Image 1: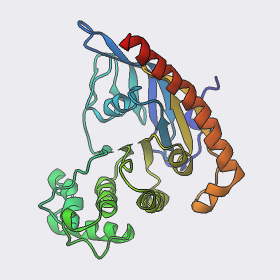
Image 2 (image 1 turned 90 degrees about the horizontal axis):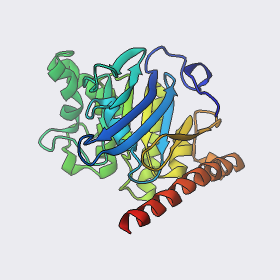
Image 3 (image 1 turned 45 degrees about the vertical axis):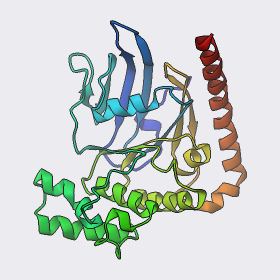
Image 4 (image 1 turned 120 degrees about the vertical axis):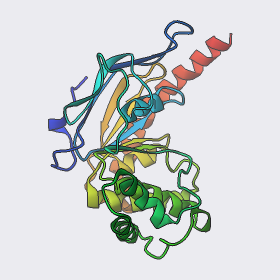
Length: 287
């Protein structure tokens, strides 16, 4: 298999957000059930890369994301951000920090705060900005994301797509080195998802933040990503890397191109092989 390093990656020529995952394994309940979720998984993600993670359900994708975020420990291996050790030998659990912000499937906005107050919350709590300056910056960033007229609205007063867009703005106001997205658009209808894709690409074009994005939608993976990382069935390890050489900025015209179709088929073939393995494993376990 070709070795992928930060030096041969697409993405922004910025110097922050390089994520290195080296021979990471995760075993749950090592003294009991002994379930291996991740098995010597390695990835090298460049600064400014949109890294799309796909694989069968339950293969360990979210376990890997949680290890990067500092929610779960690892058993062996190491994870580094810009060369700094997040977790590894002697430090199985990474510290949580604003340099790695997670956006989950379920909404996490405070329902009793306006969108502007939600976005401003992080810098205010961390003492990075005063309340006045944080609100000003929040309103500016909401306007850039097409939500300038909704800063005083509460999450329950806007659409799910607007609320999710505000969540991503809330993450970006902290100027993270890595944005961790765990199937953020999974429950959305096709039209809303398309709008969210365009909004995310616009925000990415402005910030060039490194993105670690878990999805089951292969077209989403190809449309948004610089590279698509296909993981094996549990315990997950890296099976294949699909290099998406579609120029940026992108729009929906690429969805009808032959290049896009071939990339989707290449990714689908790899994922399908692992899905069959996962299904057969489930049959054996049931037996």
